[in-house]
Length: 165
Image (tube, rainbow, N blue to C red; front, side, top):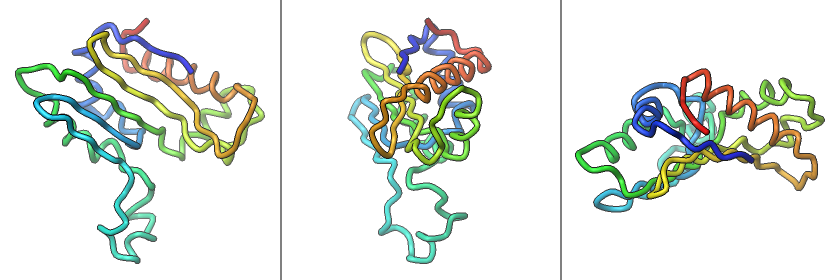
């Protein structure tokens, strides 16, 4: 786990909310505090779908909603004349990318052991911070997957010219 303190919040928010830069993620949850606090549960709602749609991987490929689908809604809640008092997004890297991240590092962890590579985007009075994390299906002492994810996230941010410390 590593924390990236974002130096240019406005630039990051442009990339996060108004571009496809983070569309490789799913939303587990989101909380946005402006004139109200808006809570979003990223889990797909089974009652919304027919039984056939629920099982159809083309209609519903993931248990969580893709960031690219929720991004415009979150953007509309955040934009305006006032800066939000706070927000928090818990994102998961799309599962198809887990294996390639693990292959880039010297790790004995398999993609089947990783539940999610997590990125938490948090803004409050102290600023904007991104925190990485790894969720496993079972308890694992090996921290090599965490280290590989931390490095991959640093490269991801560098590639998108996000300035951090």
